[in-house]
Length: 331
Image 1 (cartoon, one colour):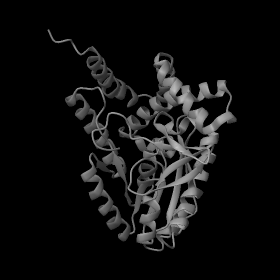
Image 2: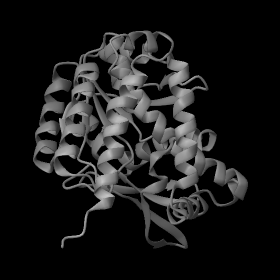
Image 3: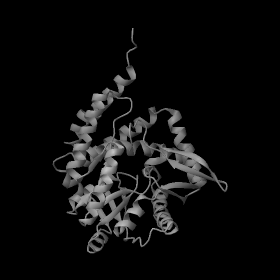
């Protein structure tokens, strides 16, 4: 007799519970209460998460940050990571509400005038963000503010779930992000190539595109200094800016205590040439800025669970960021 797939059954049940009754609950509750519930659920998830998983995060914190945090602070970061993951669901479900604009009304920003300054040149903007807090909200917030956005978002199925459940959840997530942020959803390497072509076209139409400054996607990488390690960083965003003439604007999103966000936009960076050292200098510059925010909000960076040591250079570990687990193609 075939063994009953209890793990898959539990995964399917959990997903349906989160994406249906829990989502419906978030759609009617006050925003603040929704995030308080997310904090509670994230804390519970932390308590019952496998110790091996939590130890792996601690190991990565030790490797990258060294003694910048003591052990108790690192444990608090691990707990915060689980809470942020739960709050990310809440972010998504709030974006699916009819009154989602009220949420953005409660958010704040700084430096948004830099976008107007850059767009006045007529070459579009290469918006570089990072896997930090709820980065998808940046394009959604700018769309709400009236900017013409052409962001891309890579979404794939859920590891361990039944194919039909995984696809149903994927369709639900895609529909929310498409409606609220005009995202082009990427599900395979072929659609990624198409998306890159579309992004160049969007820049020629003086629109703002999105690109991940950190991450494992791309063909060309460079090593940057990052806390106590060297990190492989993609050159794709700076190359796109150099080829198109569009300026780069870095953006960060910071979650506040009440669950709303503060959006930060940095001064435009012009990439004048494709010289490798020049490009590396620009990438190093924005990773230095990412370091600043990670040092202040370490539990907001999403790659603590997805990195590995690739080697050593001059006694310094070389770190590679990894694709999300359970992907059939890319993320």
